[in-house]
Length: 262
Image (cartoon, rainbow, N blue to C red; front, side, top):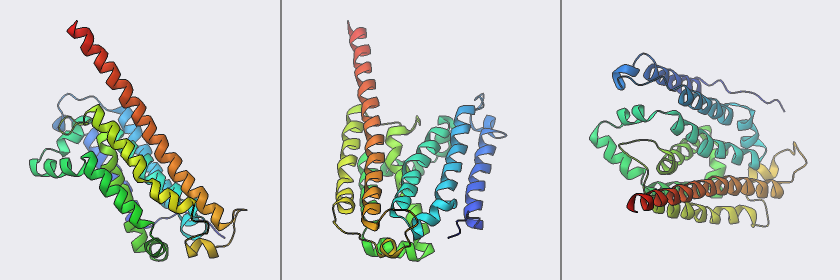
């Protein structure tokens, strides 16, 4: 087995192009977009960290491991795209740049609908679940074009799903604390069927991993169970963090309101 790093032109053009456009926006064009805005050093570090994590997810040997050998490696790859990269991109984009991009009213209306917790959560949960149907999952492993589509849908819908909990936009701000807490709880519940399907099937489901060479001492069934655990731990870790932060900020805002009232 010879592991390799991907250097496909499309992948490099997308990542380098995104980095170049971001550099233009926060550098030479900054004063045109937001007069007097300071250079966003912290956000810059986060954004380019997001680009690096994205490349590690789809361009490093992790992609080959997940595509040919280990279900758990493929699941780790998906978690990096869905949660880590998206979080870094959202936090890494200054509020003034987000609101400038959301300037056109028609675009803002569309994004407002898509990023509503109910819409984003349902879209992501449905598509994520469907991709784990054995026929579609195997098709993605066997056909590079379908595999790219799978990754793009997971990344883009993960971005839409996480927007209501992470955004700093003033034009499309986060929803109220109660809505956030309810929605993130339902997201945890929504992934339970996939987790149960992977972890309690009693047998390995995907032929690619059943017949793959054993590069580590992990049989196909336990590899599948490990993948399910990785999925649920990441989902719950993120969700519980959002729940705790939302509850804390909600309680803190209530204390402030009480002190003002009295």
